[in-house]
Image (tube, rainbow, N blue to C red):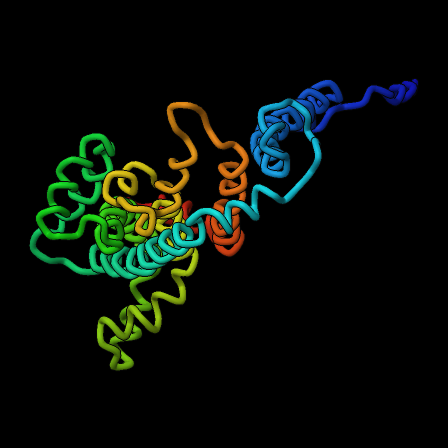
Length: 289
């Protein structure tokens, strides 16, 4: 006696990892809300910079749109001087930060030398001190060296912030590059520096991009040291210059928001230049510490 085949089931089996329509809708709604929260402050600053001073604090998104805040900022303030000072300091910090961090990270990764463990601990521990603790001793050191109110003083200060983190990260990145490459360079007659410059650095572009980005942002957006070390309108950076728009009687929101928009442009350009390497560089640098 033959048995009839079991009826084909019409029940849909959900694949592993497949979300239900309700879960998918909730996820998309959450992402939309998070995106709006992230973008709204930036959009508000941009729109405020395009409104006359009389309407700067109103809730209207568009109110007599004008570029007057930008023209007044450039023509009637020292903004271009502050911008140039910040660009010089951030550029030098980025260049020197990349050179020092890459060479330090490579030396710690590849060579054995007295004090290596102490150096690694120093790089790690120096990242734990907050600005409030360091600003007074660094101020005294810079005063003793005659570097107060000098771009070099700020560059050195910012390097003390960026280099420990970047050197530690670069050390982890160089650890992921096979040592056989160094050995092949030695076989070809290259010096240790030649191996580092010609063979290793081209493979370390993601790590270098992260180092450059972090060093630039450290110098470009820092406020506490720039405000304490630099005085006089011609010597101020953007961080110090923006404080002139705020006093005990109120704030000049028009020029301040216009300056904020212009300040964000270089940071955005640096991020766009380095963004394709950021995830690769930071994840590789975290593999080995």
